[in-house]
Length: 493
Ligand SMILES: [Zn+2]
Ligand SMILES: [Zn+2]
Image 1 (cartoon, rainbow, N blue to C red):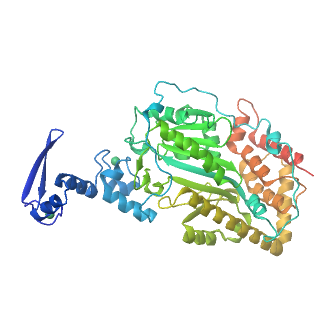
Image 2: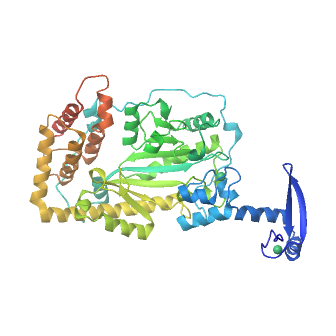
Image 3: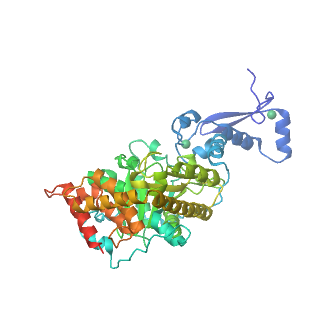
């Protein structure tokens, strides 16, 4: 069969050109019109033929991932997949992102001087997740009294958000140039130590980095890290290659190593504060780029295993307590509204689209290409404010329509928690949402802030209790009941 022209792919080739590359003879084939036209424009036909071949390739020549295997997992195999099957990668990215050009933070050239290959990682203890001085930690030094219940329109923006927002998180996905993505890495990688070392060194002067390989963590440590959203279940299961950097100073930083991407940097702030979280993470991220060669493409921005993260690689998310909207069954409506308007996602916190735990939901951006970091943050903020307003309106309605029943439920939950001898996690969990609602409504004899209830929740989580009773023969349910009682007694007014 006659060979077609490498350039147009339509006319029969009549001109052939042989080149030897890596001891292999490569034959280029052109039709006359194509070759003449390229020569006239001063373009080397070989270069153009190579470019076209890469553009049309359906297999990565670096990691072997093909268009077909991509469709199975929806993950690319290495950062070079984006170049060596350019046309395919671009079509996928455009499909999921609705954009094809990165406009956010720029990658910076990796400078060799910053590499610290000879230095070693210093191992320090992980921060404790135990409930030791729990009451002090919950209350700090001051208590603030709750004002009477205000309607949505009487509330300041701050009052609206502080009743709903639990925490704000920025996450950045980054990968190393020339290294297969974690899912495609195999059993062993000689780059792993450098990878971990670079991520730890980037924290110098930013936060107190404590690193652990996943296989060095015991079961309850893993559980505690999952409950605090520091690591994912996926990472917890990656005993071979996974590692985590925890912030010894408790300032909200963490880094997951070899989860879906080589690095998932995070910064979490209490309350509604995406901006501080991003500003702080920005510094760490810039350091990381000075220590390690981070995969970056001029057009597509930061390259990630999943094309849904390409561009900024950023996820800005806010955790919200939305008991009234959930009771009204209005979460789905809000979801549709925000999706349409901004491409934002809202979901229950532990479940995948399922019922959320303790009425906690997460709002986050879902587009990362064609939009810069600050615009993304502003959009998420706007959606959060809107959501907090809607929640307050729903709460007003709930108070007017079912006031007595609601107040009875809240009082019953409070009494139950105050009097229980033992509390297993499910019992605790089903009452805590009512308790928090009582604090928001100011209907309980408590002088507590909602953030203090959030901290109580964390202290009573299965892993926290497990760690607290380690090596002691104590009943977890009894300890949980004691903690709850002590905190609520302290908070009484
Ligand atoms: Zn041609
Ligand atoms: Zn590849």
